Amino acid sequence: MNNATVIVVTSGKGGVGKTTSTAAIASALAKQGYKVCAVDFDVGLRNLDLIMGAERRVVFDLVNVVRGEASIKQALVRDKKLENLYLLPASQTRDKDALTDEGVASVINELKMYFDWIVCDSPAGIERGATLAMRYADEAIIVSNPEVSSVRDCDRIIGLLDAKTVLAEQGERMPKHLLITRYDVERARLGDMLAVEDVVDILSVPLIGVIPESRDVLKASNVGLPVTLSDETSPASRAYTEATQRLLGEDIPITIPTEKKGLFGKFFKGRAA
Amino acid sequence: MNIMSFFGKRGDTASVAKNRLQILLAHERSGNSTEDARLISSLREDILAVVAKHISIDPNAVRLEMDRSGDITTLGIDIELPDGATRKSA
Image (cartoon, rainbow over the protein chains, first blue to last red):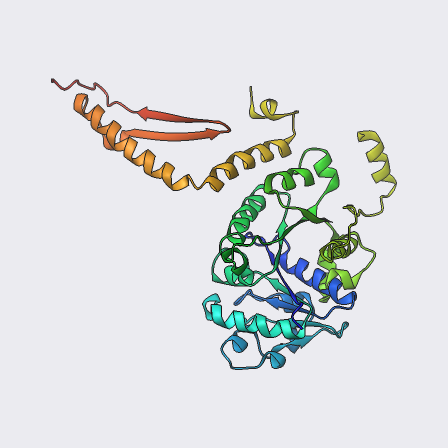
């Protein structure tokens, strides 16, 4: 009953792909047969519901549950496609101070009774919402774009994971995984973009996956499907699926799936090499 | 020599980014940022006091800058003297 793992998806900086990654990884875990709950901690600016296509079915939210105004079971929204995937939405009308430490602790403890994986989507920033999202985590996925401000903010978040979480306070080290998103192999090769090795080198966190920049991410969000459910063949979807397999402990080499190259792509590659 | 030719092949902005991040994060991780601020403001006061003993200057004319690049940190002191600065007689 208590073999549940609580994962926080965090980054510090906004817009790097936390919500996209939460939805994609939670769905990929559920596809493997696990009971999964994705929890949106972005109180006031919830979006995980929209990315997962559940926005019209949200009735109660995390703040209602924390305040005892609704039970967890009332607030959970089941996914349309996967019956073992659930969403606990954030509140859209309150602010982040509506969450309390004790309230979040009790929600996470109860979720652990029902689910194998609890994936917490952290808000941007380092305020209460972000610190509570990471507070009860067993592991962290740190999402970074190959870009200076994103990498710097991840470094700050790593410091918080090692200081402000229950695990850290117990003197244990939180296992961390680095997920690099919006990566462009070609730009990195030309020296226009930090390379995977650069980011890993700077942050010193083991890499769990590299998600290539892909048009399919926007297309999936348009229709309210996690990218791992909308188009399994897309490079981003394959990269998220592989990252999820690594999260489950599989030892598979890191690859960066790419779009199939057209004639021009091949020609260009040949010329520039 | 521009920064590009210093850090790598021409146009390789990624290595400039990496270098900048490494220097910045080494500093931020050490938690020295607040100490630096304290050091700069106390140095500034002392320097101002010493200079003011000899020359009348505007307190805002003293600027201190710290520049960290890798292993070396330099302190730049820039004091603007007023036109026709006069020595105070001792």
